[in-house]
Length: 481
Image 1: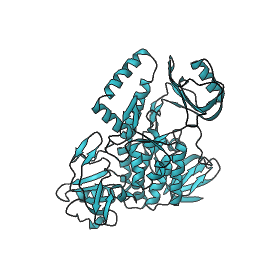
Image 2: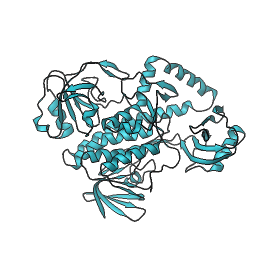
Image 3: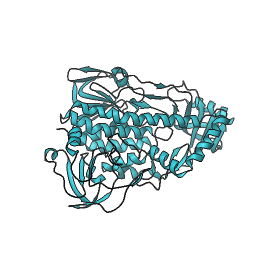
Image 4: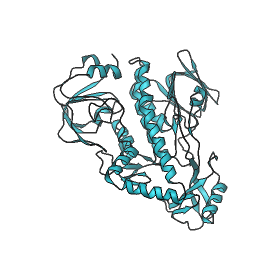
């Protein structure tokens, strides 16, 4: 029986990002993935939002993704929202297929020495003394001290653990495909009684991207070519001689969230913890950011550097973030419903979002740049992501994100250095100078404190103005006494 400190069920973006975080912390982690290759069936996520790009930048691997993606200055909430004026190095949406995102993350994880056991489909889990036993459909049993279910919306880990998954059933669904057509496609949007449909030529000039609304909300599985042809016929009066699909999939407006992100030694992340419609392209990004929040905390518990209660903060911090995504995707789905009354609502929302303040607030929400964990109100930075400031240290010019490459906490002192002998082996202490403006998306310019403690996930845990008051308590809470 194979044994590891941590097993991750699911080798999608969430599982891969989590594996990388744990490997950086020196933890024995392995991934179990049912797919035998990195090929992603159907059309899935297609982009990385600004905060996810910052997370990848914090780990020093964002350039791999930028080299293969295409930057767009807008995010979407019913209408396009410009973020090119946001104070971040990544003030754009990076269009990049999920298959390429997974391949690049898998390369990184492989470099870090994490084993990936492909062709193993997790069908059951059970807590045993001192750990968790994992059963697969292939008859291979594995054991770990901890298990993280990153195995999607139909998560076998979540179901086996008996974790409730309350929410809203689907009220409608969409077909999405990339195909070839013998007849000339009708490009652009088409509004019918069943909803808003679209066709667009893809970059190769030969395939057509198709989105068809108003489909059966009860339908599951990969749609057939016959189903797609019938849906085209119903909307356009012809199936355009559709053939040679390169991808076909469906999505619905179902929205559910796990009642608990942890049960004993079993945790959930990504779609295993929350599902929603793909409006705004938030799902993959939400999962990657779950992984970065959970990784350093789980590593500290596994290495007995922190008590298990540290893991309680994972749900406390991430559950509200996902709940907000469920709310905004439900709202966006409603705005897509057919009907004149909904169209009036859509016009009003468009008018609202054309105003500067609503545009900034909604764009910050969609890009993930406005996330603030409830760590107090002492300073606007507290609980938010630390901006990637250009600073000067005793070793020369650098960026804040460069100090987070190893996923270690960083104490930045912009004046008198602070003594943290007790945590010197756990916290990187850096003396620096900063000349510039510290600005937060949707908040504006904020005063730069004399010292900032940044967690491994890039969020600010403590700010100091005139001395170390409260620092020892915060260090003890997050990084052990």
